[in-house]
Image 1: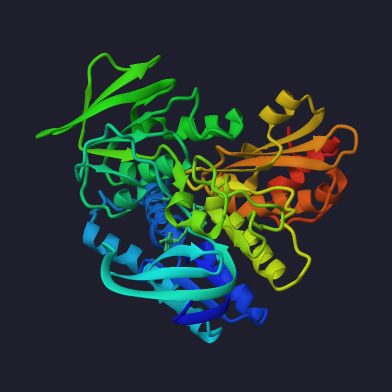
Image 2: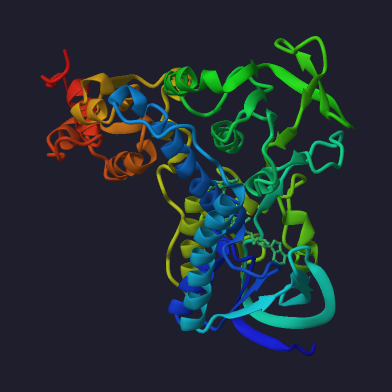
Length: 475
Ligand code: FAD
């Protein structure tokens, strides 16, 4: 059939997965077309995810930090918040990065096509041009013929069916718009995204409630890490409702009236100025015409792939949130490189041993590899090195010694299996633990590596020495 455009590699979706795949494919000599329905590149992560949330979290962390300075002899008075300027700052951060991506696409001669893509058969994608933030259809259509394709169409926030359509009910995208200054906010779902956004709103003046179906916040992390975060953050909350769920909600003049059921449900419905739905994200697998290309999609909308990121159709790959958990940008980027390389004939495969997780709350919570809970559940004998930051000169100097660093080693081989850090900058430090796991490092490798003093990173060396029984710095 007739095609308006032909390419070696078609990439559908320009998030961290899609743009990384497109750039790597272009670097490997392929003629690449990148299709994205929004005006900017960067997907969820750059536009409405990782980056804008961190821009706001940075501001919140600084505000919280200086709010404790009076005790140190420094006072600034009550903060004055100008949401317009804060929004502009966030937009500038995002713009810098998405603009950078456009420039990089141009440099590599990646053709960016704006519009909604749908497969029409295993070798053609139809793109309906979209315009504006609401993705209005302009009516212009074109067909792209491809030799290989990488599906990187990502995911979107799950909406609870009984939630009223109301500007006071938002998902993370809505919350990032900072449309108002709520006094009472409900976070639906006690995962990382909800707690990060809650941190921002609480610092800006909101009182928080959180409701979580499971028995703890920040599932996946060991409870000892979460406990440190929770102790510091309890003052932000009026109500932490665990083993509880939302069963109904109604928009009223005074707010959103929410009903709860479960172990810690309040008897009366509660009224909120803002309700943030952060109950998970669902993959976009069923919205791209995958069946026309013969690509298998699971009931939940995920696209199954092998370790080379191939779908059941050998010349069509899939990467990122759309292929499964963990839905993280760094996983998407890594998978993107594998897919592009395999399509170019290289023998790459996704064989990362571990993928780190970070909650960029205050303090940060970061973990990688085996957790203590998993070790227990799987009956794996471990040796633990636990270094409390009350023994870290740097943490004390920073007036932030609430955290700790722990490393878990195989009791037999002494090789590192996992680690967790809670404290300021934990996310920046966890990469070293990931590297140690990838390298098969043991207690001595890590403990005898000279870390600069005084740094928080030293705590990683200390934790290894503690596991090894050679630490002299902890009472
Ligand atoms: P996406 O980023 O979802 O990109 C998919 C792209 O495909 C989108 O731009 C979409 O418009 C486009 N698309 C979809 N269908 C079509 C179609 N039919 N036609 C054309 N275009 C289409 N991860 C981290 O690692 N660290 C963090 O700190 C972090 N913070 C987050 C904070 C929030 C609030 C949220 C919501 C997510 C966060 N994440 C974070 C997760 C991260 O954003 C995702 O894992 C990542 O964006 C996934 O990348 P992706 O390329 O798979 O898909």
